[in-house]
Length: 179
Image (tube, rainbow, N blue to C red; front, top):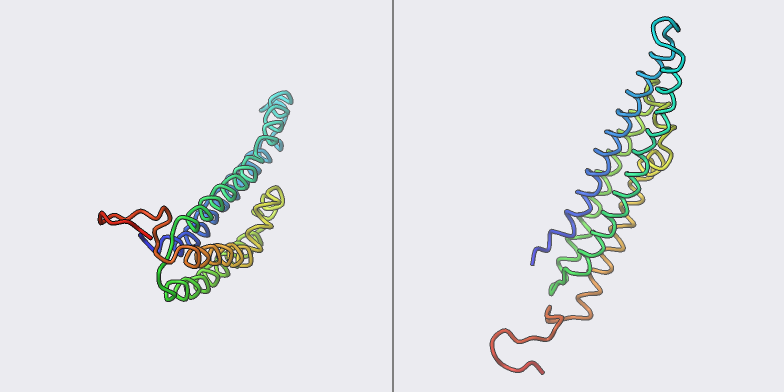
């Protein structure tokens, strides 16, 4: 079985969530710019009814935060299921996993600092305020990813303790009986 699957799952989660958060932030900032432009036009160019309809569409731009929560929960469940299904027979794998966990936490720090840098731009600050969960999550990404990986590592190591043979159903594939 692929022992690197659990470790690479942390890194994949960090990257996927950052890319989606960035996409949501840019989409919302673009929408805010378009809406502001329409609202600043005079009433002869764009009627007040059209302005009101365009402004009412702003309520639907909260989709990014909602889908981000869904992605996070789905990736977290997938990561935990993976940590339950991958068993190990050597202790070196858990040591390598924790080294990779520290490396992933450093990557998460870089991503989190990149997010903080991006949200300092004036046109992205308002959009980040409209994505409260995404902004909070990306701010605390290193801590969240470390503890998520730590829990996955504990589950990963606990599988070794419970199943030293790596055969959870106690099936002998060579034709003999298992004691």
